[in-house]
Image 1 (cartoon, rainbow, N blue to C red):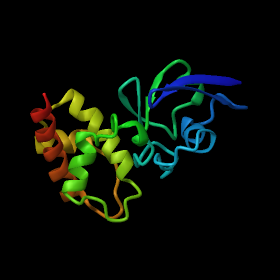
Image 2: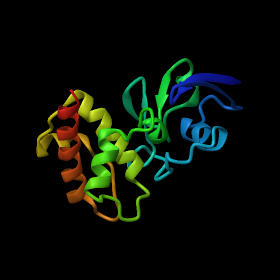
Image 3: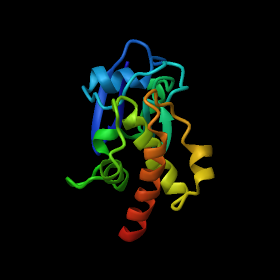
Image 4: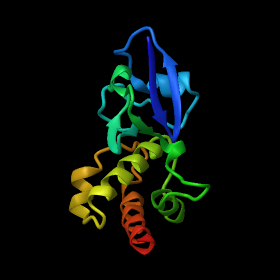
Length: 156
């Protein structure tokens, strides 16, 4: 079965034998975009978070057949025209990553949240950014999320 979608601004197709297979594997193995990570395989940890039609989605549990015709963004497509996305810039400025494995998922979840809540409170962050980091960089991430909101407000 052939599935076509727009990923990071380019129209792509993947050939899959099972439309119920997770979109994650088509992204990583079919399209060789390795920024989206496999964590738990149960949509619990968030390492695999991407955007599907601008909504944060856990790609390890999102059937590839559901991606047909959709607009998908991975961490590789978050920056635009060579400029870091405000979330990526904030992560860099706040030196967030420790091991870094989960960070693409956190950045994707944060970018989606900031579209809905441009100036989040700590409670908004707690309620919406529910990914898991084994290195416990939550404090630095919270600072980076507030920094990204500030960067976004300057760009408006």
